[in-house]
Amino acid sequence: MGMISTEAWVLPSNTRRPGNAELIREAFTFPDITPNEVLAKPLYGCMEGNMLHALQRDPVDICQERSEDSVVLGNAGVVVVERIGSAVTNVTEGETCIVFGNGIWDEQGYPVKILGYDAPSSMGVLARSMKLHERQLIRVPVESEYSLEQWAAFSLRYISAWANWRVAYACWRSQMQGVAPADTVVCAWGGGVSFAQLALAKRLGCRVMMACSHPERLELLQQEGIEAIDRRQFHDDDFEDKFLKTIAEKTDGKGVSIFIDNIGTPVHRVTLKALARQGVVTTCGWKLGMRTHIARAIECLNRHIHVHTHYARYQEGLDAVQFGEEYVWLPPHPEHIWSWNEIPTMFREYAAGNIASYFPIFSVNA
Ligand SMILES: NC(=O)c1ccc[n+]([C@@H]2O[C@H](COP(=O)([O-])OP(=O)(O)OC[C@H]3O[C@@H](n4cnc5c(N)ncnc54)[C@H](OP(=O)(O)O)[C@@H]3O)[C@@H](O)[C@H]2O)c1
Image 1 (tube, rainbow, N blue to C red):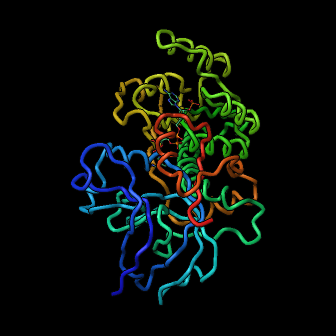
Image 2: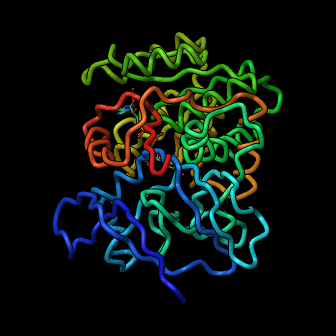
Image 3: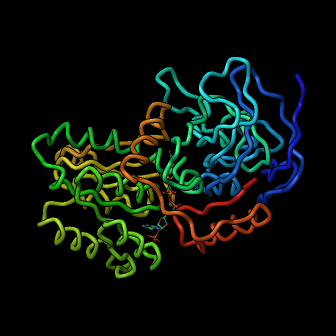
């Protein structure tokens, strides 16, 4: 089999560059496509939490886990199909597609490993040229009203939100069939995934609110019609009491029906306390820590349901994209696009918390 060489920003293994990783721009070589694969040219990518986790080698060193010398990250973006394998039926050459980052799936189609992250031999969009399995691509809707940059941002966070919401809402309904969406209170903290999920819940008629700290993000919540709870008003010593008081006031003492918590350890206890009876706590992320402690008796007595999901199966990706186009459920078009040369700077700024946007977009070949 022939080999393909391309320019990429790669994550080097700990053996090559010990300690804190930095992306290196170099030639990256990979085997030519197999019958079910596609050679594609990434146009735009979106900076994601997992890309930073990979660079920080935390919670896992993915180069070590994959036994690879370098890994090309980037599991959110939009690409143009350049060449298809002999057995590909899903897409054709020249089509523009959204990256669907399910790297290795189980027999039900749910992801076990993620493309451009922990799936061995997979590569992400931080390369001028890449290859993917045909089921890692979803066509951008024909004559879409929205920009490719918006679809690049949609690719991972919106599809994750769609798949997590599907389960969380079904769980809520399993115990609360008689409650109208308008009386279902959905609250969240977290970033782009939580924002996307609230925007979805709103389109389905639920009452939505989000705790947030950044002026630009607070403004975005307002534009989307999401009730903002400015978390700068709470301080470490009175955070729990004041936050719970705010939730009690906003919900007539009932609490939150569905709480989306993608933050984890430091806030999980408050999340559970903010839940209504029969409430659902739902997550696909652990931005500030993956370990949590629960008092099982209290969770049982309150009939709380705990939902955990990880990205999505292919049909969920297709459904999310179709819904997004039809119901204008997409992230805003970005004001700033990071260039190919600026990618390491974007990583540094993201790590330092200096990027206000929930969806930082970078260009690869656009
Ligand atoms: N498993 C999956 O399928 C999947 C998919 C996508 C993402 N994820 C994971 O989900 C997590 C969230 O990702 P994301 O992309 O939605 O978010 P993100 O863009 O990484 O943003 C995190 C947000 O958390 C907020 N925040 C920080 N500290 C906080 C605190 N102490 N309390 C409350 N809010 C706090 C910040 O907003 P404010 O300061 O404005 O409040 C920040 O914007 C990450 O760990 C990511 O890797 C998992």
